[in-house]
Image 1: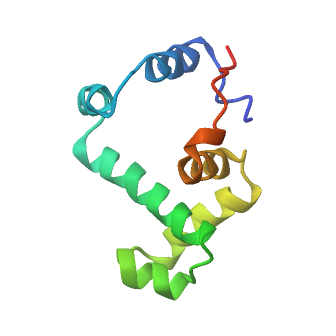
Image 2: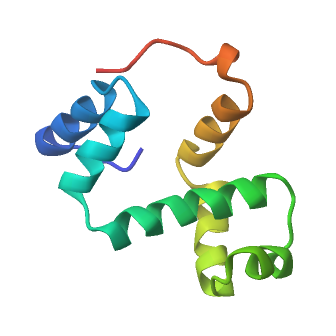
Length: 105
């Protein structure tokens, strides 16, 4: 984890997200918190990570999403060398029953 990211305000943000109970509550919070463009950008990054995780090529991802290879490369770098956030979420989405219910506070 990037120590530059961790601070009380960011902890409060993540605690707020963890307090949500449904997709509808997520929509409401993120609509208040972010612009539509920011939400769409985050969603697209997760889609790119999922496609990379599935073994899709940059060319296939470009054809599916229309995003630049630079964006695909940035997501790939995070997927391969980042804090494993994408990998954790993608594995849990793949197998929800195996998800841990514990949360670090």
